[in-house]
Length: 96
Image (cartoon, rainbow, N blue to C red; front, side, top):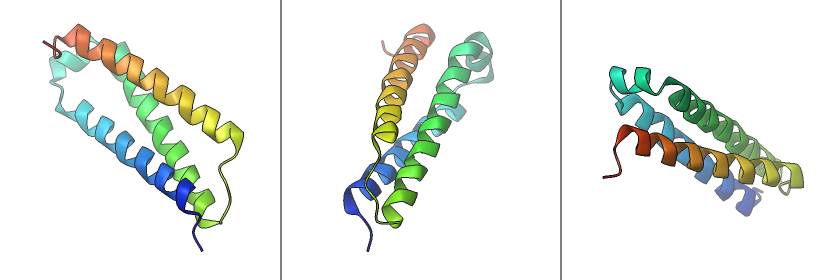
């Protein structure tokens, strides 16, 4: 049996990470070049969130609860990605 809460958390974070990665592909080459460090930080943050989401799904398939280190990692990663994303959109002038 699948543990439902970790499965939903994992699938949710995988979906959010894939959405973030697809947004990066919509930026123009000039935007990516001008804000290279922020784009890289956002991309790596989304990739880390994807890995953590897959870990949560894997744990749910093993019928295990989410460990505290995974919950803490997800929380820190989400906050960092949101802050970088907000700064990136502000620097690119997309939140007008």
